Each structure stands twice: as structure tokens, then as C-alpha cells.
Image (cartoon, rainbow, N blue to C red; front, side, top):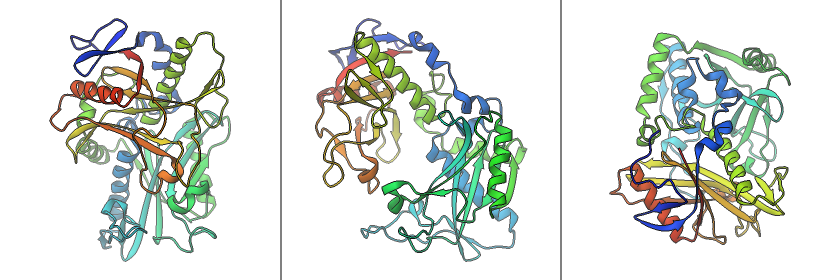
Length: 405
């Protein structure tokens, strides 16, 4: 990708209209060994009909697959009545939006909940897996009954969608303190060491079906009608950031994998900045340790906020000190990165409570977040980036490195 004129190739970087901050500028070519590693999950989806769907964020893909499940159940039950959910209230009395309803729709008077998961490779455990998150299943000690009558799971793999009616037991596990507020996790794995995703998918489906679940539908993603419908749904969710990132390195990776690759690059950057220090990535609390200094790393893409009409960056799940939750930060240094159409911009947070905020109830357990917005009248992504970098500098963040594409 060609850089816009005016972007300096030397060791200074432009911040919001002036040469206000000096930082190390590196070329992305130094990290090709990381940028060119698509990961086993992405490799499986490339060249298959599910590839475009795999590139969406989990939230956007989940919205599409929920609608698909609803559409497929309507096809399978042509004489049934489907109604939209009745919105209730949160525990604090606030009204729930339709997207936060306790169930997704009614089918002949029964409340239906849909959850979806992408078939993915777990490198640490050397197997393929499917994990469905945030399912409020009835379980002693957490809740007496589910807020729905039937649970349908959609397993998304490179070439097919499988819809399973779950038995509320198979693969269910708790998620620690978050279980009460967010629900359980449903996780089913293929055999350890089985690298073929088709074989692993068969194993996963077999585990579901032999335990009491029911396979409701299996749909080929290359089917013309299905493919056309999915294409329309994906295009309907296209946002300004999708256009801004076209052709940008890492844009053809799933968001979770892209975050891991950016973290790997940041780790190498830290080693460049501190060549004489010892490093370890064995810590379970933070992303790496440099000479005894615990470093936590968070990255984000630039997003266009439809409601506010501006660009923003948001770093989530930061385990900092929080009254009533934890009495100390779980790190010594916090690094923030912006993945932009220009490159990767890595900054060090100044420490303390600068710009931290809770993200609803889940922030109490998952951590806090930092958000930065640009002005509403800024439409151009390059100008928005400059403005947000300038704001971060004004908050006390130190701009460490920019890696230019």
C-alpha cells in the first residue's frame, strides 16, 4: 500500500498537525515473518465459501448467523408463527434494547435463543474446537431457570453451517465469576493432534449428537441461494472502516488472529527498544515480562461510530485497579496499539486512572476500557487518526513506535 504524501519516513511521526512527538518509525517489512503467517484457522477458510464471513468480527458474524438460524427455522416450520422478542429490563431497571433481549425470537410461543461459533484451531491444546459463549443455562448456584425455552447453536465451518438444538448439558462449563452475569460456555473439541478440520468437525458434531442434542439443519455455504443471502447480509453491514482497510496488511485475517499477530509484533518491538533486557512470555497474568516489568498489551482497529458519526478507538478488558473489584493493576506497563490504514501505532499509557471507564456490568470482572473519539466533522480516516493520536499524547501517552505499511 502506498503511503499518503506527507507521511515522514524518518524517526519522527506527525501528531495532529505538527511535529510534536518523536518516536521510532519502522518498516512493516521487518515483520514479514509475522504478517505472512495466516494461522491454521485462516488457512482452513481461505478458498472456501465461508471465507468472507470468517473475516467479520464476532459480533457482526453473530448477528448474521442469528438471522440465518431464524430464517432456517422458518423454512423448516413453514406453518409456524415467529414473533419478535418482548424487551424486558436490566437488573438496574434500565430498559433492554431488542439486541439485548433475554431471547432472540418466539417460535410458536416458545422463546428461542441462538448462539454461534466458528470452528477454530486451538494451538495451545493442538486441536480444533467450537466455543459458544454467554449462554444463560439453568445451573445450581447461578440461576434456577433459563430465560428461553430452546437453545439453537450454529456451528460455522469453512464450507457449511450446522444448526444444533442443544440439550442444555453437553459441553457446558462455567466461566468463573462472570458466569452469574454473563452465562456459561459450551465448548466441544476434536481429538488432540487431529489437524484435518473436516475430520475434527465430524468428531465435534458426533459429540453433540451422541449426548442428546439434535442436528436440525446442515447447509452448504456454496448453495446459490444461501451464498446470495449471506453476501447481501455482509454488504448490509459494510461500514466505513471496511473500505478504509481494503488492501491493508492483516485485513484478511480474522479479528482475533489479527490481534495476536499485532501483539507478536509489539513484543518484537519491545525487544528492539530494550536489546539488553531479558524477556519472558510465560506469565499468565500479562502478555510478557521484560526484566521483571510486567507488560500488558491491548490493540484496536479504528471504527466508525454510526450513532455519533465519528471515528473512535476502544481498548477493552484492561485489568487495572478498580474499586470493589481489584486493589491493584495486574501489570506494571500498559501498551496501547492502533491498527490503522497507515500502520501500527504503539503507545505507552501514563499509568493511573487516565481515561479508564467500566463497560457495563461485565467491566467489573473483565476489566475496564479506554476510548478515544475524533470530532464529528472529521470524515477522512487519516485526519481522524492524527486527531486521536494527538489526544492520546495530550492524555500523557508516550508514542513509542509507528510501523508503516
